[in-house]
Length: 126
Image (cartoon, rainbow, N blue to C red; front, side, top):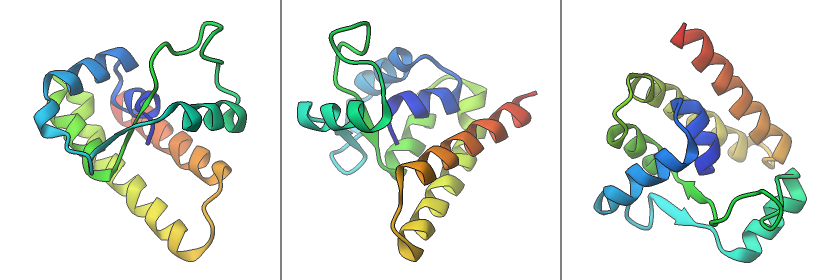
């Protein structure tokens, strides 16, 4: 899950999530957190129509969190919503794993899961 998606779920700005991760680097080994490489970011820009890096987009390459990293991120954020949403993140990853097992996982399926998670988050947070 990209840092921007996870930050939305946890109700914090992306830069705050990444600051918390950086301050707690020992909690995020390689199998929890992956910093995308430039060619991977270029691929994301073309696939998901995110802002280009040179025109108001991100200045740093995004982080991608594994299931374990996404849960660990909730533990380093001082935010009640992050703690509550960690349960939903676990469920989303379980659903993604099932989708991968059953069929090929498409970008649309990923987007649908993130949107569903954000909807659940908004309802739960009210």
